Image 1 (cartoon, rainbow, N blue to C red):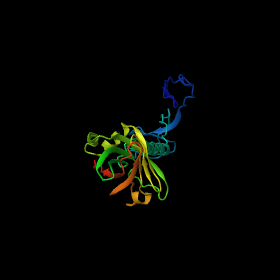
Image 2: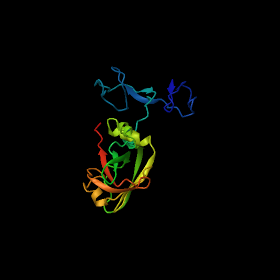
Image 3: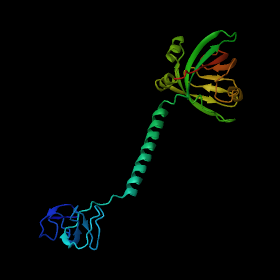
Length: 242
C-alpha cells in the first residue's frame, strides 16, 4: 500500500499518483531494517540507533518511506498566540473604559442653591447635578459645565438619596440638562430659575481643585423671574464613596 504524503490517502501499490489529490506517490526505497526492533535505517548504517543491534552484513530491503506529518511553524504559532493575547487585552481595556465612561463616578457633583431676600430670609431653593464638577477647571479662562436640573421643591432633595456617585450619575441622565457658565466676574446657572451669581472666578476656584467645592458665604445674585431675591448660598452635596 502507498500512502500519499500530501493528503494521507491510502493507494494501491501499483498506483503512481494519488487517486484523491493527484500527487505523485512515493516510490519504494532501499534501507536496512533492524531485525531486532524493526527500525528502518539508511544504507550504510552499522548499528541500530534504537536498540544498538549490529547491522553489518544485513541485506537492504525495499521499503516505503514513512509519511511525515507537516512541520508546524512554531514561530508563527507563538506570534499568533502573542498577537491574540494582546488583542484580547486591548479589547478588554476598551470595553472597560467604554463601560465606565457612561458612569464616570468621579465627575458628578450634587449642588443645592438657596435663594435669600435682602434680609437673608430664605425664599427658594434649586437642586442640580453638575457633570464635570470634580474635574480640574482651566485657569483664568471662562468655561462651561453641563448640569441637570432636579427641581426647586424641598422634596426634590430626597432624589439624591444616599448621594452616592452612582446615584448622581443616574440623576444626571434622567433629568433635563442646562449649562453652568463660569466667567471672570460672574457665574450663571441656566434653567427655570436663570441665576447670575456675582462671584469672581478666582473665588469660585479658590480651593484650586474644583468649582464650587468648599465655597462658603452668601453672594449677590440676580434672578430674572424673582427680583426680590438678592443673595444666594451654594451648598455642595458630597457624594459618598461606593
